[in-house]
Image 1 (tube, rainbow, N blue to C red):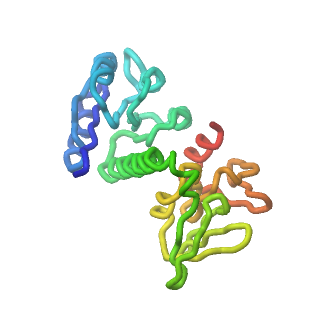
Image 2 (cartoon, rainbow, N blue to C red):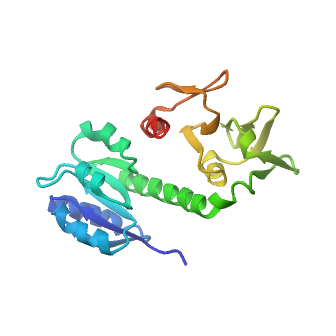
Image 3 (cartoon, one colour):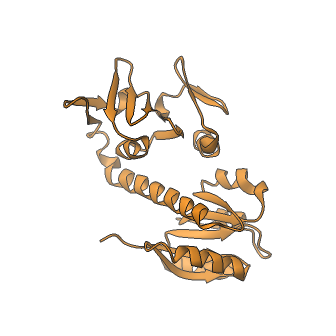
Length: 236
């Protein structure tokens, strides 16, 4: 049985809390533990109880959400909520899940939740398999009714082509029916989605700019919707 996602809300606006609570109530996996208008009151709970996710307002009178997030140790994942766009870059530098602008529509809330679930699944897969990655250094992909072995270290980048993906290696291109969103979950943590049509092996990146990553002589574009997260990851 899958454990529910325990979350809290920290926001000095009661209406904003009410909206998030309403959206979360539509998602069975989300379990509200508590809501706080004062961020200082949330510290004690975070010290004593395991929380998976925090919806955190940025503009608060006693302590900003950004400063609050910087103080957390062994922190839960964070989704910032704010009425202001100018915090976007700083928030992504903190490796938060998402940045929601108020008033928050349900479809945008649900998209942020899905980002959280994807990150959680990747982290879980990584934590379970990290010690095995030296041994499990490959996978087999179905190529025209034959299973072909592909070494993780050989993968340069992966490209989406309609209902298929093309796995680029120095020696060959392997084509299999799959989606990037599911294929990346089969890969080690050093693979990164950089575009709706591309994911790359970050260990193979020789250089990058704000618009592409370079793998040898190959330039792989960075999609606009992935840019902030990709640049934050590569600059670490």
